[in-house]
Image 1 (tube, one colour):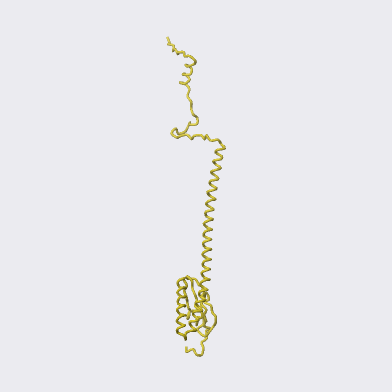
Image 2 (cartoon, rainbow, N blue to C red):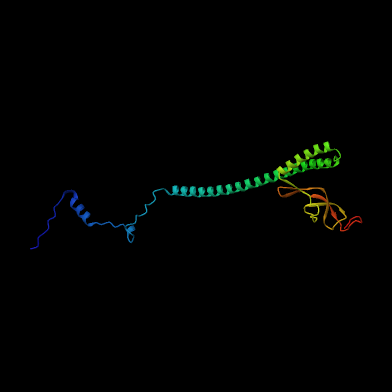
Length: 202
């Protein structure tokens, strides 16, 4: 005879609840087919408008960063332009000052030539001229006197043609000057015309 199983009756449906707990199984369908070792992404608990504001702020920060980099590059280019402009202006001012000093030195040189017959005066003027020449050298000026050289129109100014080998510098009226390797003032010279005077022994 089959033995009947007695189920103890509990008050307030306790038996039914216990049976339900034993038989009911909940399956999270979101995890089906996924690696159980991976941690599932936590759903965002932020309201949608907050996420939109955060995305907008991020876009603005990116745009601000790009604009800042562009402004910094523009500022660097501006500083370079200002620096180059100041150097150019300083260079022009320096050239003008050197040219004025050269005019004084030329006057002293001519005075020395005219006072050759007066040793005392000539000596005094020569000392002053030497100081001017020292000043010019100290500031990067280099004098050149191209007697016997071929005439170079880029560095010389022909003031007259004279007897002598054609195209050759015969005499220098005013020495040329270089300032730190660049031509400051061309030399004023007389150039041979290719004719030899009757008194020339050659």
